[in-house]
Image (cartoon, rainbow, N blue to C red; front, side):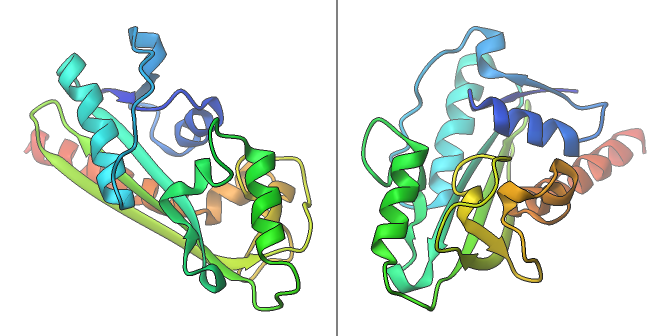
Length: 198
């Protein structure tokens, strides 16, 4: 089964490929000739995921998968939220985003936060399904680790002492918000395959 991923983020592509079954061929949108910068105009993760998945489906009439993820920091009224990738403004810059986050938390001890992922799967038949994942944790006072991407160097999930950026891919993929959502999607695909056989 071929699915077009509505993203040009190679880190995200590799992370998703490691979790989905080998029977699921995930293609980056550039590989099918799409280089559009899809504007995320939604006010929720669900809306943005749908905008991206539908854009790819409308262009190709093929199954598409989009993910909208973000970091919500409770002290900051759930900022940066849907603006996580553009928190420090355009163009999107990870280091600037982290700098702004740490600055906004200067002197704050209560640094509880959560990572959220919403996957939107737009099937070839035109049906739409959502899969959600979250992981709670806290924001560190400084960057730690070089693995991962985004806010990974400053997020420690509950029950761990390491940031996502200090974890191996295997460790992160066993606990991350995206992994939780992807496992739900994986179970959905398996159920669909079984129903098709039946």
